[in-house]
Structures are given as structure tokens and as C-alpha cells.
Image 1: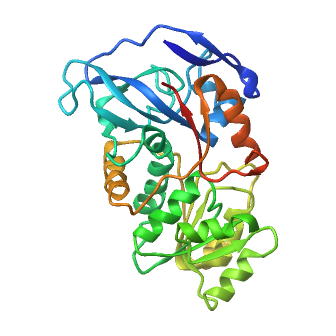
Image 2: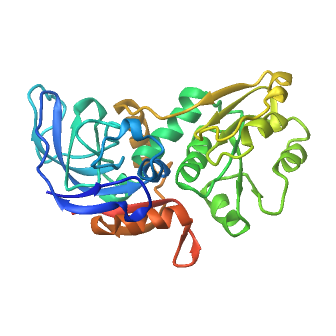
Image 3: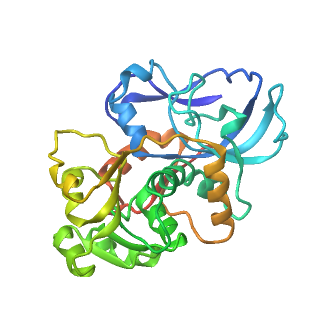
Length: 323
């Protein structure tokens, strides 16, 4: 099979397209022909060497799959050859990721693809959708009468989080660049704040009459953790996907009894089945900002890191057509 191999840690040129053997299928596993995959910040973090202890080189990376079941291992009961499926492969799994024509995956991670989505659309949803679900539903336990501030609403996770929060009945505030404000409003944001010209702490205070929001969802990092208590209501929750690059003073969190949740998403079938229902009901829609081929994965990585495509801001996901 063709696979994009990570040969070394570094820039987008660290990949090489090679012919490699298809992995063996063991008990409880599926062999899936990958039709589409996608690029996430986690992918370029791995590529540049942020997690070297977990990724022995050379490696096949990638964390989104939409494809067709080609072979069943012993004991698989919920799928048959020919089924269309989508899922996130086991992160740092021993049999490789999704930058290849075939992927082997435990049955427990796999869900039937939403019937109304193309493979590219389905592949754009697996990691970001699971991450948004775990952050807002499992961790923050966002309620239907509550409010949430989503940082980075035009991004891959943020664009799905806005839609998920609205589907849950919450009031949604989000930050974005001025050029993206109308886009995030179209996704369902009730209030959009231009972080390049406005102070979001002051804006939230004004918009909420000083009450603050119940949840802050951080997809961008920086000083968000130390600033979040200033926009939280009492007992509010902060969920972040971003590593702490530098120490931050969280003393203000004590004053509002804040909860902090640090999420490195865990994949399972249950989250994707819940998202599948919302996708098939039209409550959430995929957002694709750019498309590339398997051979163009280095260019796709560079596009996501720049945050621009054809000189315009990148919105949503970068997807890869594999076959």
C-alpha cells in the first residue's frame, strides 16, 4: 500500500511517500480501506517532535479515517465487509495511523459513517467532533440554559464546538478574527468577538451584565487559563486542549470556584455514535477549508500551520483524499 511515512521530526518535508506492507489483522480488528483522512494540530505537533517518546520512527501518523471495511479479524460482530465507517485510529497506536491506503483498527473505536456525508466530510469530523464532545459534554457538562465562550471559533475544533453547543441549547460566545465574524455567526454563535481589536474579558462583562459565562472552551492557548476566571460566573468550568507552554498564575480561579479540565481526547464508539445522530439530523455540519491528496500531505501540514489557503484565512478542516 502507499503510505506517507514520517522519517524524522521536523518540518513538513519530514514525510516521504513509500510502498509498505498492509498491517496484519488480529482478533477484534478491522482492515479498512482509507478513502479520506484529515489534518489536525496534533498531527503537526507529532511531526515536529512534541511527543518523541510515543512515536518510534519511521511512523505512519494521522488521526482521522473514513473508508470501507475490507477484512474482519476473528470475533468482530458489528461490521461486515463493505460497510462504510468512520473513526479516529488509536492515538500512538502500534499499527499506524491514517496517512495510508489501509488502516487496521480495534472494532471498539469504529462507527458506521453517517449516510448523508461524503467520505471527505466524515473524515473531517472524527477527531475534532470527538474532542468537542468530550470537552463540552463529558467534561464541562454544559447545560441547555448555560453559556459558553469558545476561543478560536473558526478553527477545526471551534467550528464544530459552536454547532454542538447550540445543539445542546447553550448561549454561545466566541472569539475570531474580524474577517471570520460573520462565518462564526452563521455556525450559530450568538455573540462574536474580534480578538484582534477587542478585549474579550471586557466584552464578556458587557454582554453578560457582569455575570460571566458558565464555561470557557480553550482551543488556542496563550494566557487563556489565567484570563478565564475573569469571564467566568461562580462555579464556572474551563476546558483546554492546549499544553501549558509557560507557568500561569491561576489565583483568580480560586475567587470564582473555577474547575479546570485538561483534555487529550480519548476515542470511543459512543461519542461518534452521538455525533452521527446530530450529523444525520443536520444539527451539525462539517466545515472543510482545504483539500489535498495523499502525496500532498506535506503541503497540507504547511497550510494548517499557516492558517491560510490561497491567501485567505483557513476555516474548518484540511482534508486528504486518499483513494
